[in-house]
Image (tube, rainbow, N blue to C red; front, side, top):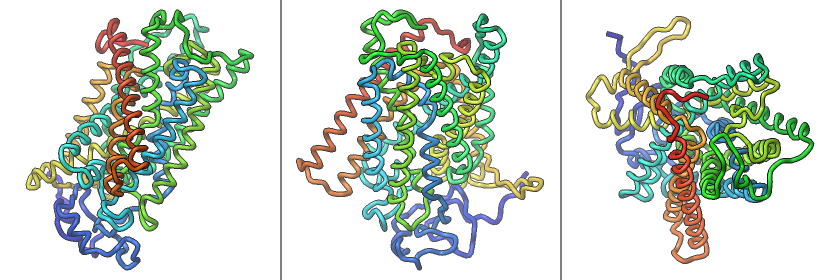
Length: 513
């Protein structure tokens, strides 16, 4: 048996942690957060801080404006950027860019509202909400907590599935681009995605043993750099292709009825479904609200967390919107109605093949980090819940020490090892069963956009600020919520229709590209 760690406090506690200690269990949960808050002073009082602990008795948070920005950019500029040229191709030159700007404005507004719900009551001195569900529970309560948790964690798991598919496609694209180069484009270079999904899953099994989100800041920074890398490559290749064509392709209304694509001739019905699906793809590209509170919980204070988060979201969303419009528009300008569903792997581009390899490698590295940013909140929720439910189980609650050469001691928890491994394996298997990149992206965007990005932030903000019914602010927020609900429903319908069409010629575990 591995030696048990004797340096860590109990996993469950309802008292303040001894400030003489400099460690705590990563699964520790606070049974009475309000009591802890009453025993501490206001956040803006310098004396309420110790060298090691914040005002809630937890180990001092170390996140900054830049780490929060990197987390957000890692979450936002993901595989969704690769489908934007296809999305604009469905909507056209007028509606496409306009929808992207509108989504950016809505996400920015909703993110600012949600960031003020990190603390209940007062946004500076109120009780902290460590997760999105905690914020909903403390503000709205009732069945809405269960509904929120179900949607949030299903969306997080779904995003992991989408990232597994996208990473495997990019890994295959590296091999296919070299195959195309050697054959001069004569060999179709078909190959199976299964082995690449398994390889990606193995990497995530290892990285998933990192205990919590606060410890993957370095991975987020690397992933953010990679996201800018492949976005810049896609943009550059689009500009080169437009220059080579000598004109901007595309039309004001998007893909024309009768256009022959890889999935067949576009009918008027398919035009409608594809336009709806494009809304879901754009929504997915901006989707990060479901982990906003978890990111905010890594930020140190003072200044107040919501102020730092507001600056981080403003910079992140502005930066990503510029990239999105440039990448999406240049991809559409380069290929018009035939813009591929994945700009760098649909082989709208063939050369220079080495640059495509760099871009797709950057995508894989980015998705490795983004997978963790999205899954760590889900891991933490399950582990804290089980630790509270079975607090006397050593399998669930105890840490054991493994000496590592030149690296000190690694703390291993057997439940964490088992549960996280099982999760990654399950996600990988589902990705093998549903390898439809654009359809999965559209469904995920539709599922998470209205409830998590708009409805709950608006509802919590109105209740916290005690906004009176039928005032101009109340009416405006309700109209915004209703409009976004209609967009989510339309995107869901279009994406489900896309899945139904794709499954007609599909065999499980035998999908090739």
